[in-house]
Image (cartoon, one colour):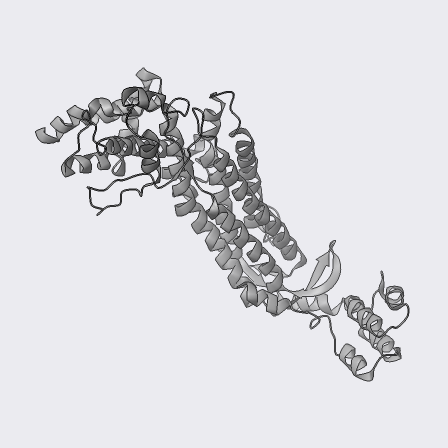
Length: 476
């Protein structure tokens, strides 16, 4: 079969495959298999440490071998599991059988083989498939969040923070309703997004990643049937919450999955935390869509230019075009990501009675939702790196909008009790072209202190910025 990216159904694995190399090993089916092996091995090692006669403690070499089953998991291993699945027609059982086959590997010493033979039937002991699956998904999300999503989000926030600081004092005409409005600074408008993104990031980080290991319907039925005197809830909590093995750790300690324990469930973990996580990513993406549209508009107004890329073509017929394609690409992919993430956040927490299978096919698309998000973040970073401010255009627009000073003039007039202040400025400015001399004439005629007249006469659209620069700098 031809595996060319040109034949991929999804552009994530076709046109954009190279851009998603970091998330693919985590969220692919191979990544899912690797986490399943990790969970099975972690559970087996925990059983060997609780004093069960049928599952004695293991030697250091045997523990190293077991840990290596997932730490050194390869594409060949994944293909072997898929081959077993052709017979079992059950993906979790295929993982169990693959692990047991590894116990008989020729390269193992007789001593290790003997240890493994004694505990072979404890592989997947008392577990239901969802005990393995839900923990595996949580491990995938944990890795994707920490190793891929947050680094890209942080890079976007960092770049936008740099721009907000660099342009903190550069004046810009606001555009409320798309019309000229009270001046601000370029940096302050970027800072608005920086603060929103930082808040959104904190919500993503704060969501606990839950996992359960409590049997077919969440009551430890099978475990207690086999060993009624064992505190299975305590063991399950320890496996879920204990730290993950790191290379160099002492092999006599208890290893776990580094997640948060879910004590109540049906056959499946409720997926409420997943919905919260997807919603948090969606909130982040909505803010970025807002930014993409704003920066697109500022580029259209000429407030920003884009650095040229050698050899790049903007239009097949119009050679002069330098289109804001990176922000358009980001906006489109953020929308695709949110469509997928919203569906999952609404569907996954719903399951008929103790379990139905509608979540199984949906949950396999987590990588798609996150993949489109990561793709969008990369486009944003590319677009941000091309931006160049156009101070000449900014100054021209400000100098052509003296009418925006109607706001401070009428506000000072009201302070000093001048009757009809708002109405007077409305009559002078609304829908009209206003010049500096028109405002100066009005100011000179006002019955307000001379010092206030002088202060108003010093105002220009490019220095009527309030706290804009201070707020921009503070956001950094």
